[in-house]
Length: 383
Image 1 (tube, rainbow, N blue to C red):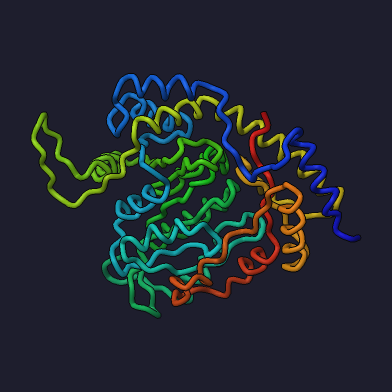
Image 2 (cartoon, rainbow, N blue to C red):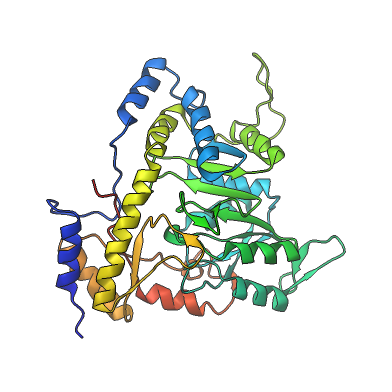
C-alpha cells in the first residue's frame, strides 16, 4: 500500500480544527497562571526566594511520591547537579543511551565525565537492560574498593543515566537491579516523563536521584525550569545548598564554603509551574485520549505507533510513529511540514555528534534502526 500522507495530515488537522499550522507541542494556559504570576510580581519576590518555589516543591513531592523535591532553573542544570550529587567526577564514565536529547550529555560534560553509549530497546525507546548487562559483563569489573571500572579504558564507571524517551517508561526496575549489582549509581533522566509510571512507581523514583524538565514544550511548563527528586534527605539538603551558590545559612552574613551554582528556580517561574501542575491530571487524561485516537488510526493504516509496554503508564508527551525506512521518513517529514503539520525526526544519535564520536559504545543496532524510522507528530493538549 502506498503511504497515505494526505490521510495522515487530514486526520491530524481534524484533531486540531481551525488551525492553519499545528505545532508539535504548544503550552496551554487555562488555569491560574495569570493570577499566580501577577501575585508574584505584586509581592516583588520574583527571584529564587518566594512562596511559589516552596509550593512547587511540595506539589512535586505530592505528584511523584518523592520525599524531597528541589526546584532548579532548568532540566539540564538539574541533571548536572544530580550527577555531582551522585559523586561523578572528571574522567569518570557515565553509561547512557545514544538516542536522547543533547542535554543528557552536556550535563555530564560540564563535569568532565566521559559518556559510554549503550543500546536501547525498540519497544521502550529507552536504555536496554539486556544491552547494559552484556556491556558490563564484557567490559567491566569490580576492584577492591568495590567500585566498577571499565577494563578497556581503566576509568571508574560512576553512574548510569537512562532516559524515559517521549514519556515512555523504560524497563527501569531491571536497570536498577543491574546497577545495584555493579555498584553504579542510578540517576534517572525523567525530563520528559512527568506523570508517567512504571509498575505503579513514578518515573524518577527508581534511581537514587531523578530529574525533570519544565521547558516550554513539556507537558507542564514554567517557561524554563527543572526539578530534582529523591528519597534521600542528605542528598536533597545538599542539592538545595549547592543550587543556591553553596551559601551557609546566616541571618545577614555572606558565607560560602565551597563552589556552588546559581541553579535555583525563580519564584516567577515557580508561580507558572504551580498553576500548570494543578492541571496535570487533566492534561495527561487529554493526552492519553489523543494517544488512543492515534493508535486506532495508525492501526488501520498499518503504521507502527510507539506505545507504552506492559506495566507502564505513559504521559505520551510526544507521540511517535515508525515508518518503513529513512527515505519514507524523509518524504513524510517533507509532506507534513509543507502542509502545516509540524513533524520531527528523533534527535541525531549522540555517538554521531563531533563532541562524542570518540566515546566507547556497543553496536547500537536498535538505536540506528529507530533513528532511521521514527517521527514525532503533534501532541499538544487539545483545548
